[in-house]
Length: 360
Image (cartoon, rainbow, N blue to C red; front, side, top):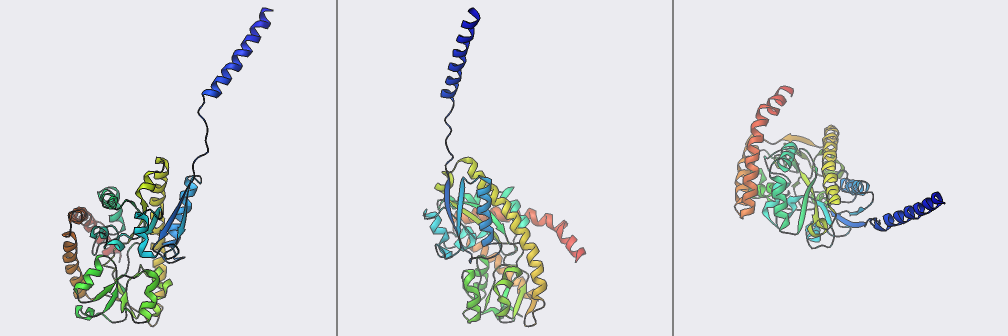
């Protein structure tokens, strides 16, 4: 009887303990799902740029097990391409993919985060963002607009642009109507050209109809797909105006900070990964496209004359100094960039420059 009483009491105790453990356990709730919209500045279906934004969204969904889902809209599908910045700053949508130098009208300091004439290449920019103060300054500037920026994509080296007039001397630029972006647009303006900023979707028809005489877009791969070789006679190099072209994913600050920390890191990691992928794709596809463009009999691929290139370099330095002098934040970004680039140039001078001279 004593044994039966012990087992009975023990059973009651175990049941009570199990019940207590269940009651004391934290409640398990289904994870909240976040549904975002991303607008871009790119035409629908544009390889690497628009498709890169779409793959970024897919990767975010996969890394978050579907907890963060981003629907991507090409330029013009939800908002006009050049309205992406305002749409995100005002909270109409949660994020965009574009290029920072499109927003020079918002603040001149934005121009340094895409590319600088005669500036660093993709590797130099990557180092400035992640081991220098580049990303910190990027965030500091964009915080004034309720935005959080992240590098997302890089074009690698670009070429110098498409022209329907041969450029043999600086004076040949006077009176031309050009489509260029960022600091290089101001260089051309100082040399007597008329410069407009057009979204990519309007470049081909603008050259075809004679609205503009020249333009740059990205590089051989996307330029070929756009058909610029059909409407322009001369393709110039090097791409002094954009030794690389970093693109950006930019998030509404309230939306970004409203995410759990883990999802914020998912966005950061996905952006970093897609930057590597997109850069690799541009390097591969540009090399292949250049071979194809060399077969176009109506196209001449030419270097800028040395005297013209030297003038571009001189005027670029003047333009950058003028832009940096417009406000304290632009000055801060410019000076930091130039200081970092000085070390990068010194290193490059004893590594890549002599190597490429020997290789080529």
